[in-house]
Image (cartoon, rainbow, N blue to C red):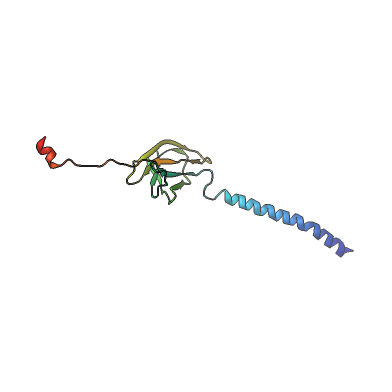
Length: 140
């Protein structure tokens, strides 16, 4: 009779044990997801060209806190960028790329555990630095 009781008890323990293991694994996965890129205290976004609305690769983005350079990132091939682990505070973000006008976003507040999206459109810089010809000075 003790073998029968033992087998019966073991059969009822297996589902409880499996359920306990399932909760442990699920909890571990949720904890890992909260530490992956894209967590809620990241600042992320994309940069596109205003004319063609196409993503801009290799845009240099600098984050300044109290006039001190904190971090620099570069956009990828899809125009995406991400800042993580920025200290809380009021930032200035500077977006720069050759052939485009510099974009500055000031007074951007970064808070603990509050991420946000900052998407930017950059205008092409069509200005040319042309020196006047020497004839301009001779005849004027």
